[in-house]
Image (cartoon, rainbow, N blue to C red):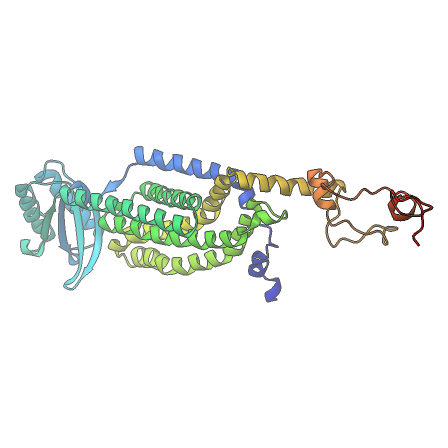
Length: 398
């Protein structure tokens, strides 16, 4: 059973998953998804947390009632005391002193924050000191963003240098393109869902870069192994060898991705969804979506893009033409594959080892080759009988 399983058939190239051959389809889908993501950036935009947009935060004990009740009451208080401010996000958070509700609002002045805090305490029927609050400036979020961008630039530069030294520049370009694709699509989904952008979100984006790079390196390592010395034979084009590498790496990449997504899925769906740990949903969503897209981009985008770049290389172009010419000659019966049975009646005829090369390249007879016609009759290749050259034929030595 193991020898006929899907994993074994993929490794031997018998499953026939044509990934590289359908690269136009994958590129088209990627372009459409990028367009949707960019439109989401401009229309839906991102829901920035108070760390990036600035605002106030109030922590109310969970004993006041449900989360919806706390949010509604806070909105009523802000409408009368803070000139139309409102609650941006509300979530239940667990702490050492017990559960509490964190209510994040738009920017308030110090006087408005104190007045809103006192009024919320009165409406909830608790002491004012049981409600804590703080103010966050948007400058802090700007510093986080600038440092994250600096880290991204450094990461991309290091990755480019490593991949060029480890593989080649075309593989480095294809890998970095898949990384950017991963970031754009993950950000697009995050924008469409409408989750709040927090520092945890930025950390999640930087984390998925390493996972995406790992997937790409695994596939490219197999591509390099399959294409080493490929121009020495006329059996496979570069694209076919790369597609075989994708098939051989597919099960490994899939298993790795599934194992990595299971705990992240538990973090997102169980921790944030069922248990209500709102602080986990931002990080969980980025990691889950980013890891899933990293698997797809490493298979469907990175390797097809690499093949597209390699096909512009003159050496690979010439090799691909030789492979296709050989297949055309085989299909027309101009050459016989090595090891194939001979036609009936030709069992005693020797096989010319250069027949295949001559059929493909139209080779002329080799310089200095012996003529195939009959040699002149007579002794010593046509010299006069009796020998002697210029010596008189009748003279004899005594």
